[in-house]
Length: 216
Image (cartoon, rainbow, N blue to C red):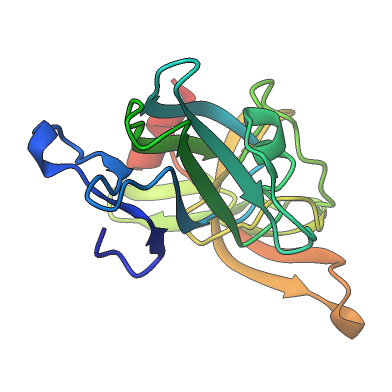
């Protein structure tokens, strides 16, 4: 209730219910029949789909109701919140959520709202491959602590500006050569503010590195 992104009207926490998290309910002392909870939820950059969604609330059919709505930055008004409507707005940096609580009369059942939970993922469930432009690789002999070792150290990679935002802790798997690469540097190319491509420098992940366990 004290979070700066939560605004409420005719609604207060129902501490007497002794639930965790604390549920929101209509103001009883003012005989409220309508109330709103508005909050802003940040969206992870590059999210492509919602793989978990749950809204927890309580109402009595015919006496009270709980309705959820969503609004993106380009929307003129709120629309009904569903998993599909949420997924269609993952390209926003954040979305506005509105929870409407209502009841037919001051004596009717008081609806409550507990929480909204959803989880967005960057890659689709079918593990969409990412096409990129990679120059010819060259191998070299490198002096290591335990002798000479041949290997590829780093390569540049260019990929179109898809709905991904590579970071220096991301890994790329080469399907053709069965190799793993870590992002060392990523530069966003935006000529005239038009998102065009990513220029990256990748470092080869050797079999003795901890990240290499991901191939097993």
